[in-house]
Image 1 (cartoon, rainbow, N blue to C red):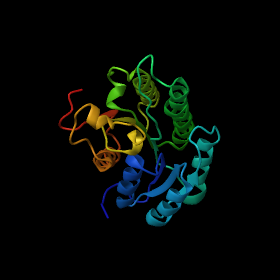
Image 2 (tube, helix red, strand yellow):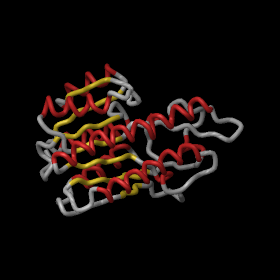
Image 3 (cartoon, helix red, strand yellow):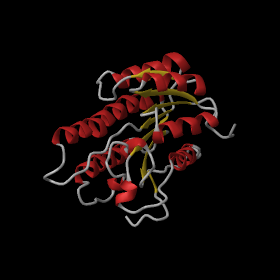
Length: 240
């Protein structure tokens, strides 16, 4: 087990069944943290409950009641909540002519509305208890755009703005707010695409979810007086 100031603390992770969320869950477990995990796949959560000794709650992140239920589960199971990784997300890209507007709007609900709900429910708890760390999963596309990626980038720009405003609001307290900004990561986010994004942009060695997870562990392990508002992680080949 890794040593540090995270042992015994409690983290809630959305989108925890695969990709970055799963990798972060395993990373934080290695630090001795206690976990509350949510995703849509009950079977995967059941396995993770055993593997990581986690409390789990299956559900769609867009359900308005889910943030409050997650917080209640953390408090009832572990008696505290110290970190929330606001990680669930989806990606829909396309030209003006080709993008699926219904899927694009679903992406906005997942990437913006659900993230906002999680952020405010948990930030109210963190302010009330006098400590806590909100970590929002943004993207390198939360800082710039690519052709046909404007809708997705817009959802991540929204998260960047929210994170900065919340950080300013709690400045001078023990509550922390951070954004992680990964570049291309090899996850299931692109599994239904006919051509994987790494092939279309000719990137042979994208990030692995574990690369991002190590950075989250680093971010959370900082001393109480240190703030890292933004942490960008990109592959060595990245030209964006």
